Amino acid sequence: MLAEEDFALIHALQVRPRATWTQLSEALGTSPVTLARRWARITSEGLAWVTAYPTWSAHGDSVIALVDVDCAGGRLDEVCTTLQADRRVMIIDQAASGRDLTLTVAATSFPELSRLLIDDLQTVPGIVSTRTYIAAQLYTDGSKWRLDALDRRQLRALSRVEWPPGSTREPQLLGAIPDSHMDLVYELSKNGRASAVELAHALGRPASTVRRQLTALLRARALTFRCEVAQLSTRWSIIASWWCRVPEERRIALVKALRTQPRVRLCASLTGPTNFVVTMWARSPDEIMRIQGWLEEQVPSIVIDDVSVILRCRKRMGWKLDPDGRATGEVVPVWPPAT
Image (cartoon, rainbow, N blue to C red; front, side, top):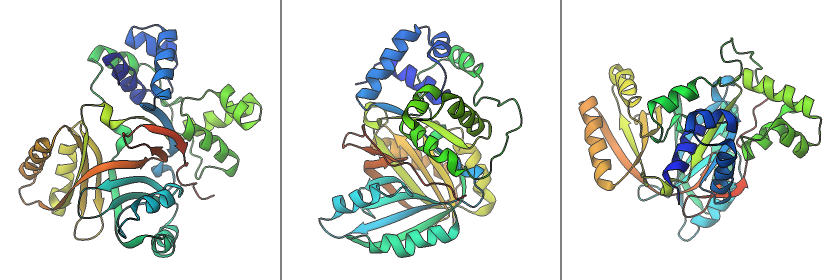
């Protein structure tokens, strides 16, 4: 299990995922050696991990969608195994009701999304039906979610660590990530904290080349780094999603209100009658009802079509998880951007 000092380290890595142990030690008041050992233990137990994936906004044609999946009786595990191997399927959540699975998928273009939905998912053995909600706008996601383990002084200390490198200058845009950089992206998806030397060793190329490519990716904001934590090891053991109809004139006000809520893991507007979804981590079923009441207070005209409670996350941003939500060490890097 995770102790308070573990949560503090994980929170720090959520804020600055590639900070050095020396930089982190200044904020946490613990020696770099102790922090490195602590992180090694945490990751070896699958309790937290740092990953990286292409930044959606850096690839203008990319499309994200949520897909509800109904499975034939007794075939859910078979379906999950198939979907876990597809890098376009970033997240697989097993739901309590209304659908068997909810997938978060990404494609490099709308035609690719169409192929995934029409040609590929429909031929997966065991899938009976699907329902798709295309994200019109993504307001926040799990990369921005934070634990509440650090105080203001510690957060101020971390804010002095420049991230990403060169963030005080205008991004040096790359467009789509070049093919020559994709194997580097794949390695970072497995260990977002890997050093240039470690990456060079894994890729069999000079460290100077890797360092140059990594710097280009970071300065272009082409990658999103994300420190994840095994959910059942936190105080928020339940995932719930509210599928809503929000009047257009109230949408922005609701988004602003949701950005003040630290529990939010996803907030997006959708195409179709159900035009808004918000996902939060909660402590209890009772808290789910309190959150629903809060949503109705923010937008009295809101219509909540469904509340989906997630029983188990099978895959999160390419990482396969065990029944306790711990990382198994198996990673399927998320979608490769088009070149």
